[in-house]
Length: 100
Image 1 (cartoon, one colour):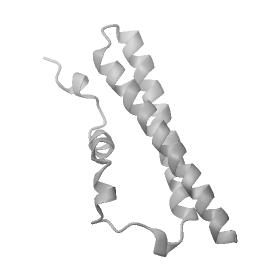
Image 2 (spheres, helix red, strand yellow; image 1 turned 60 degrees about the vertical axis):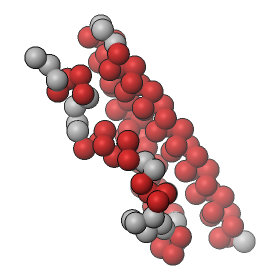
Image 3 (cartoon, helix red, strand yellow; image 1 turned 45 degrees about the vertical axis):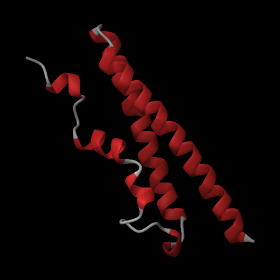
Image 4 (cartoon, helix red, strand yellow; image 1 turned 90 degrees about the vertical axis):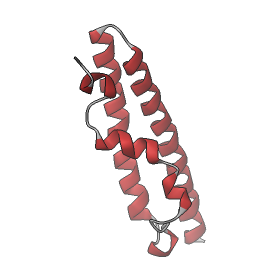
């Protein structure tokens, strides 16, 4: 019974994490299109905030799951989130690194 409850809790955590990743991506996209520096900075800070929330929640998810439930690295499900991983590799948004 405890395992079933644990799976439900982890499932809800994953859903929240997905929602926050989408919100972060939305803010990053808006920041890339913003022309006002202050608005761009505000959007980037909001995106950073959601990034921290996602990292914290992902840590909780990883610590809550059973080791046998974890997805192996070569699984296709892990490859679906490549856009988030690419954003985290480059600490600066594209519009800041391409300034001429």
